[in-house]
Image 1 (cartoon, rainbow, N blue to C red):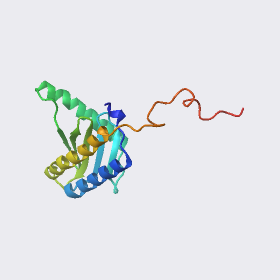
Image 2: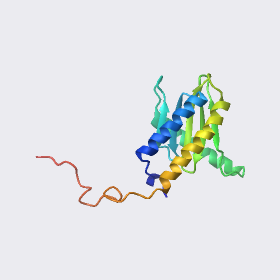
Image 3: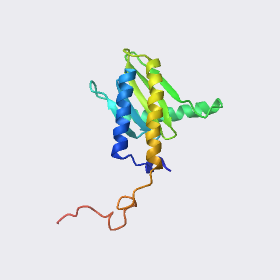
Image 4: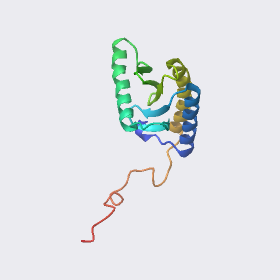
Length: 161
């Protein structure tokens, strides 16, 4: 199944948000983003105190994770399962959830990378289970299960002039 074929239903999204919320509380991280390997943001929690460009950070984190996979292969590994970047004020921890998703945590000096790492593994397993269930679920039949036909894909509005 292609990553773009995945359907995350409302109950899946609620469960994922609950997992991310628990992860933030347990780890002390400020923000958590669930990202697909292509850089698309799937879910997020936290970030009440500052604005984060989630589109850019999601794309850049996925690209960084992908580039380190090439380095891992040069060393005989399939991939590195975790990246850590430490800044003067903020740090980022990126870890594997499954073959299609990664978890990114943004945190400051009030917590440690060890706390984030321990709880990211736990959260990753839990989110991976939800995504696995979503992938295993049969695709819904009906009007949204097939591509649009020619009549459905025409212009939505025509000028009266």
